[in-house]
Amino acid sequence: MTEVCVENPNFLSEVRASMDILSSQIIKDRISELPDEILVDCLSLLDMKSAAQTSIISRRWRYLWTHLSTLDFDPDLMYPQEFETFWKNEEYETSKYFGWINQVVSVHRGTSIDKFIVHSRYVTSYATLFDKWVKFALSKRAKELVLDLMGINLICKDHSEKGYPLGFDTLRHPPCYTGITAIQSLHLHYVNVSDEFLEFLMSHCHHLERLYLQAIPLSNLKVKSSKLKYLSIIMCFSDLEKLEIDAENLLYFLYDDAKHESGLRMVFRSVPRLVETVFRGGLCQFPFPIFEKLSLFSGQLCKLSLDIDLDWKTYENDLAIPEGVIPSFPNLKHFTCTTICYDSSCILALKRFIEACPTLEEFKMQIMYMQKDGFCEAIVLREIDLDENLQPEINFSSDHDMEIGHVPDTVIGNMNEEKSSHRNLRILEVVGFLGVECDTRLILAITNYACSLKTVICDPQGIRYSHTPFNNFMDAPNEYDAAKRRARKLAKIVEPKVKVVVI
Figure 1 (cartoon, rainbow, N blue to C red):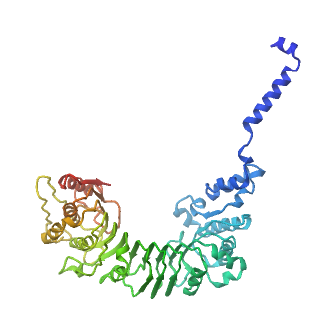
Figure 2: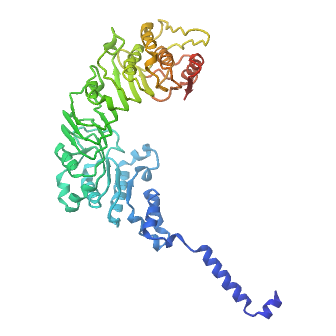
Figure 3: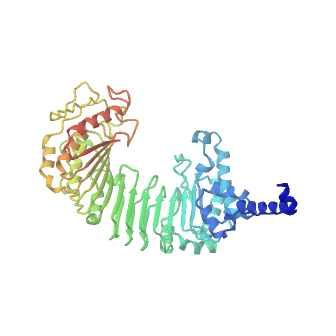
């Protein structure tokens, strides 16, 4: 080494120079050399809090996050702790959350945004801030605007308060007026808007494809749009008297009035492409006005979900929904029915639904049991004796809290006679499965009734309410063990071609 240095006095300096070059190539920040547009796209893959933290990397990164096109103010980023901790200092935490939104809005440098999403509770004293945020989103020509103002305060204590007032005054700001034309998706929850303003928005939002309305004080709404594909309306505290829909490209429609009775007049002017619907609330109560509405386009539906309340009083003398009430669904492939059962025989009334859907491929039932005289803490049911070598005999002793009536064999027999009419039904799912007389016998009937049935899914855990039989199985140490054990016994007696899956 000494000899080399003597022969080449510049050896050490050359080595140092080479090391410097190599080191610079190793640690050189190639990412920061990318164009701003690409770096901002990379930041958009992060949540807003993480994206903002990149500002400390270097001067190059200091303001890049202020060009984000997706502004999703997820409260979980601000409140990673449990809600109990939040409520201990609600006013301070709410102020901090609003301050976060206000700061981002104030420093944003992008010319446009794709999404502006706020999940919060509406506080009247902060109304001017809400105005500022909405005007900001519209002036930036947001494609998706979400005002979910019940996200933190889940229960509205004062029903007279109709939420954040959004109306024509907001559009007096010129950029806002032109900005509404860019909206493709609009989600309003607990926002006080008038029927007239909503109709104005739909007529000027030329690219609107998705509209979600929840807890909006509407009375008479006309939905007319040539671009709209998804429409969801959930009514909570107001009485919608008339709903008129004229949307030639509508594919999906959800309506939930969250009430036991509904005097709604629903008119479908033009929905030629509607293939999926979800209905809950008063329209699904006896005498089932929903079926009259569905009959207008039942032939085109491929997917249907209903929350049906099979009131035990309705079926004291007739276990089945009267013939002719349910329209035919010749193209329905997926049907989900959520039902509250006051009597075990009520579930068998669902056979009318199956009969009306000759091409059905998947049938999902979601069940909750209740006593005839109202809500109860528990219904104690004896475990059913299912023997794989014997025809199941289902009896209930009279010393239990509720006597479940025997289901007449004629009901099951009628279903078996029509076995050849359901060659497409392959999946049957029972959420809230208990393994009691009603659900067990219905499953056994359908396994015989549907010649192509491949899978039966038994899910005891899918729906939990405090007034279900769970926690009261007489010989089960775990609240779901009994139902799962019954499902496994059921698997031994169904036809071999049918696989029983226990969740």
